[in-house]
Length: 164
Image: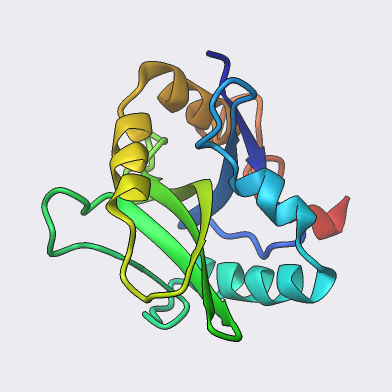
């Protein structure tokens, strides 16, 4: 399978965190970008605001969280919101793609889910765990977030598309 990592436009950039979608035409579980692209603009703005809040290093479990106390899912992550009684989720995983900047952390969003209860469907987390250790996925993440200082400058590899 061919994996591609797509940066999310319109986000603030920094040298501590990054955020992107994983894409793969051959895997129906990888649907976060497809779902995001289909959202209304008001929902996209709400999510970009939450993405920026996380990128800035903030914590707010009502909008996003990981599972740091669960060894099975400690590298999994979710962004969440509600519309009416429906809970919406973008699931992903955390990864440190830069060897020379080991503290640089990226959240790769892979799947979208909605439900009528608050508890997480463990299938999304299991799939995130499977993907985060696949060599092809890791390589795609490293291509999207290359080491700084080579041909790429810090400005070229950020997520800030507002400059373009």
